[in-house]
Length: 262
Image 1 (cartoon, rainbow, N blue to C red):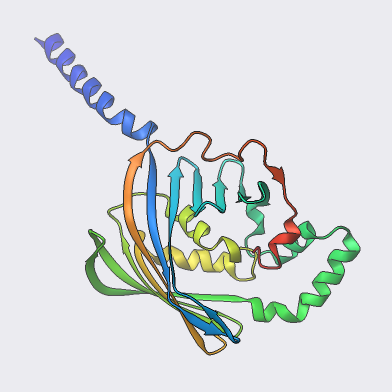
Image 2: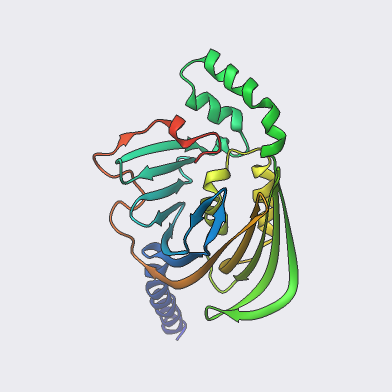
């Protein structure tokens, strides 16, 4: 009788294990996000309204974010590096994780010599205070359903020199994913700026995945509005080689990224 019960218990454990393991080891997470920018006029130039989609894949220790078919961002935790892919030029640029909040390291990577690096650092010394990122996350008690998920509202205020922005973020804890990698992918172009390391820590106050974000940026007195909405989320297998530099791509010049990683 005891052996029968033991074998029965083992059979239940085996069945449960077989049912659970495929979900744990095979599927990655697929996010399809719609982005919309309102029309605005800045310094005499008219910028029309635009709507686009972004696709993000999150796997075990790796992330890929596709911005249309022109550029992609890879975050590779095992290798401790970011990779920026330019699909138009078929080039890639690798940045170490240590680049976060480290403008001087980015300058060293972009310079042809130590002398040139020192000259660039001296030239930018007076600009460092204007590039300092200050971020504040304010959780609210407001809750609502957004994009089919139960969400909590957060207000995020950011200041960098004379540029300010405010975000209304609706985040859900119903999607279990690596939020830290996603936050880095959203801020990849500012990662080297002073204060970004502290900003990423501040963003950890947001509990869950942001399914809807409404951003208003004040640039020289002109409000620029941009919205993000999660359209689709599912567990599925990524394309082959999703977290790798495509074959035939050559290493690009980090200097082309600009002083803020652009």
